[in-house]
Length: 230
Image 1 (cartoon, rainbow, N blue to C red):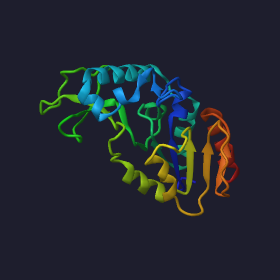
Image 2: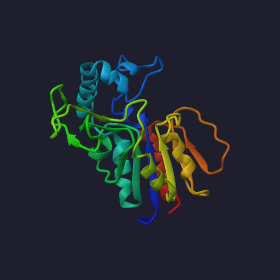
Image 3: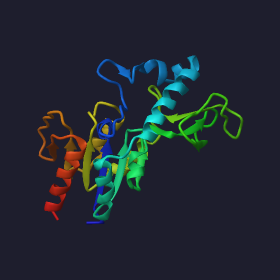
């Protein structure tokens, strides 16, 4: 089975079981903050200190969180499949669980990048990135995050990964956030698609198998299904 390529698209639902809120709540707020005030280029230009504070708080929470069973089981699937994870999450829980092939569509909170050159990226030591922390060229560092209103530079590599998948799995994402939601359109016509989500989802397509569970229980069920097909 190692030659079978299993591609997993993960969203906020998988990190929520580690105690992280990685996207806006139903009231439009993210951990009590208005999205437009902390997660847009305009917010950065208006009040960079507030944006740094917001992401410092998120980063501290990420570093204190632990990978959950779903993260660990996905890492263990590498023993059976050629696993590639495309995540909308900015945390590093997949890495810490042991997964090796991870593409972060929306950036990585444990890294910073230059405000002058977006390809100039640095790891952050600890949880705090401060105003006055500069890149090697002397420009302010910002969180290495794709903010709302910015392009998603890794969407093209993600499309390529999805396009030759033998199995496609979607975990903990509503498929309402574009361009990530459009990745499903790049799958080969007849491959199986598994959707793990606690909400009731109705899709009238034989390719889709819905596992109506939270991430941890859902991944356990997924593994049983995959093993039954070996």
